[in-house]
Length: 407
Image (tube, rainbow, N blue to C red; front, side):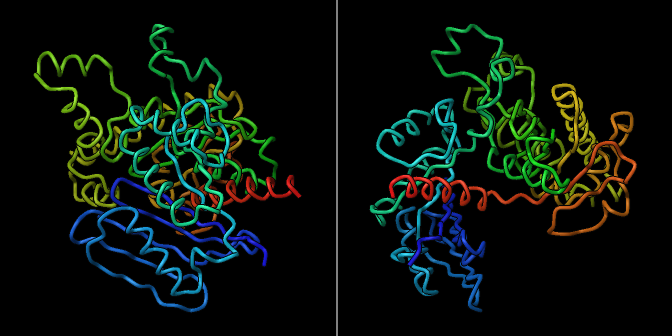
């Protein structure tokens, strides 16, 4: 029996998302989420996607990620999709930070684990959880290839002029300070799908991708290769996000330390969890912000305007970086669903060849689509992201190619 299935695991600090995908047929066989791991009220939501099975939602204490993955394995087994299946080719893991070293999906061994662990200081919230997921899955299926797909990998093609900060080189190198970028699997998937939408090969197309969710990032992709992105050493830099500030003058930190008597940890929490939209208006749900705007709420209006202003700045900057732009692609929760954000982001940019057709923009769909008028020089697209499929695709390609070379 051919092994064509990939289990994709995305381990968060207190959660575990998963999908099981058959790469030969393209079918999603199951998906789910374990949340509130380590709490008394942990929850496992499992959905079989073939065979007519019903979704199952259970609550109860799940002590740790090892217990969570065992519970997931049990749910999959109930649907005849257990981890012991000979049809399972590999397990693909989302790893947030791969540093400068990991430029491609990588089969995990002890050396890879050590490097991911070494990068914890620049990804303290994400890499530890990713490591737990990897070690747990390896213990359950030690014979199966475990593959790391790094959020940062797509951005390692950035030139030094884009990835270096203008600080002392020796200090930067000693502490691995540079711009790494994140959401790489999404930017890779969306830039490629945008080229397909235009009927072209990725090598022929220059795309600005706006990944707008609670976390948000922009990228400039020239011929399928990332040349710049908005997030930096950490996911804090760049666009205004749900709870993150994005770009700020670094002196703000010194000012808060000296004048506000705030500690480094307090400022960290401020900029990552109490800023962005929630810091501006107390709300990080764009739907609620738009509702408040419609009711005349000026605080919500200002938050929206600041959000859009930052978007416009990055669109213009990446237009300049690319020189020629064939498409602007919106993706992720806000990018895919918030028509007012898309409209506002390109308003006034007609001289750059950007425009949105109001009727096309108002359509809700799960399919990639063009929302710009026919006369527009640059296509504006909405392209739903699929990070799990991208992780599965990269994982399967790696193990499949390895198997072919060993035959």
